[in-house]
Image (cartoon, rainbow, N blue to C red):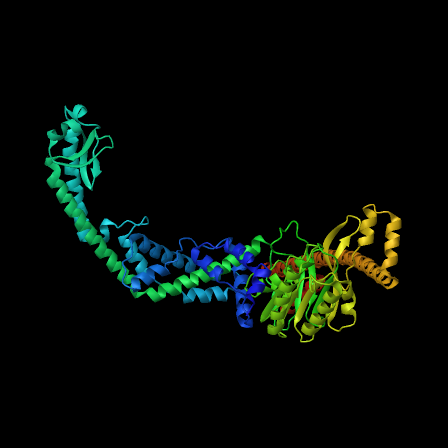
Length: 628
């Protein structure tokens, strides 16, 4: 299980929030809220394959129909415990079932018409319960706005017809008052309104006795009384009675539909869960598209290879990419160098990419990247960018490290940021070396950063460990955030001070205090950095030349193919021409023979058959086949 502290420290939950933004339903967001990295190899493989299928579908179709889905599991639960569902809840149930039907049809169409394999999506499609009958039954009774239709039952239709008749009667009667000769004098306004669910007219208080009936309300000033005249009391009573009957019939219909929901309650839970899973898969794929992420390969051997990876929470246009590879011969990387160089970002990039992959989320790296499945991930990262380190900070980190040392094993990824910081430098460096020796010796994969110079030589005398640093541009006095594997970091303090204008005699005096050995080490590191930069430039030039060679090869292959095609066309043309010559020669020979036979018949000359055959042979020799 992945440690909760590591999830928080590496900002995994922020990634989860970013993915959740691409969900189209509350069901999907609910699933995302529960998403944690898996430590089961088969499950992680399946999660990544599902996400890759989602990417393929989005590339081919642009989008997937997921509208109209609501989390109707609470509705099914209420139905199961004897509650009555409201029209809105029933409408949401029908809408979700309809959405699942549309999604099933869409996936079937993709599988049939597109050249893409989506076995995981098809498996989920086949697992979806088909509840079309319930959808139709609900739609026959409730419209898309959640209102119960007249057609829901014959009784409801009859009641509502009577209601409309009675309402028409009472309005007609009251309108006769509002249009009467005394209306402008006795009424505050010529309108019909409703009070206490009964139709009334607004009467000036001094004429209250003129209409008789019942006073249901009055204005705030007391000048207007809302009166139900005696002439409409009985009609209003009938309307009230019909509305009670209407409500009773609606409740009967809702109870009946609720019972139907209860019957398929288990299927509804299953359906919603599958829809939520699909929404999550597509959200991961959409996130991958938006953030230009890729699906990594996964292994169980602790091997990590991130090709031009970047921190997923840093904007793409500002993030610096790094290629990071370790886990086979090299199982530990120790990044040394001063603060603010990007060491912590590098650690978080590796940790986050690992957690994202184990959650089935594409990672911000190029194709060909590979991550390992770790059964546990530990991270000790704090705000170590400040110069001041207090004992409380050291104690806090040490408590976390002690906990890590109790729980880690050979299948763990351990990330230490500024290991040993916050205490006496000499003691802190000694502790850092001892801790690294302990975890590295068990085979766990380790990445650590430190600014202690004592650890610059750590990777040179221990097998399976490599030093690294983050490049610093002395010319611009700023870090480039480029990770240099195999090159330990140096402080650059003298170079920076000199460029900032510190007198040279002070710098020269300072160098005498550092000792010859340290100066030689810094010179060696500077030489390594220069060699590294030269090697990178050479590699870039070689890559460019290789690319040019590939282009030339492709051009030559294309030209050769065109020549071959032209050759075939010329040969075919020659064959066709030769064939035509032969056919013309044979036709001419046949014509000559025909003429000879006619001469024999017309002149009664003796022309023997063998002579005719001999003449044909001569003609055939005259038109020899053309060789090609």
